[in-house]
Image (cartoon, rainbow, N blue to C red; front, side, top):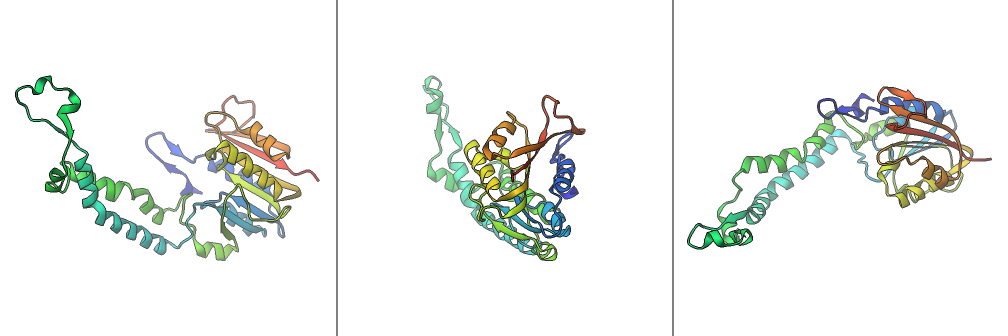
Length: 277
């Protein structure tokens, strides 16, 4: 779990709520031996492995995750870095061509409008200078800053990968690439469906479609366990109405731990629902 929480600057900690969300989801999923579990938008979450260790048959589903060993993931990053390196001169020329060039001072130039004095440099000017004036800063952005987080994931994987194939084999977890709005499963296929901090990133129409499809693949009496961040507004009413399941529990996660639902602005909300028999 520590690999999924990171400091993003002084006093800014990302994904801190996972310390509360994961235990809460795991406890209420109650993934016993012989049960079937679907984790939607799994990313590189530890939940599928923990539930599989309890004896459940677990399927993790995500649209954007990368399933690869660290070596294979690193080779893919290196190939992308080399492609960016080869394209750097062309990017530099393009940036130089768009750089405003002040018109030479001369009689009558003071009375010209600003748009006329800041003309776009002609193609010949860009060809004469392969890199802009701040060449190191330009190269550092394209070759270091753009790849910094991706390279860091080799040492300390986070939510966005890479997902280890060896762990999937070790715990018997099946990883599928798919869309939450069109789950590739028959109705009433799972005892438990979980979705941790994914729905708040989806547009309202697709979010409702996703929750309805999660309810569709649940068995009667099955449990749907959701967590979602509270940003502009609370999604609880929208999600409950979309899925049509019975609400069992609503819990709010705050920076200092779980709190009562009466707190006016919780940071993360957990919702537990059950499909009627």
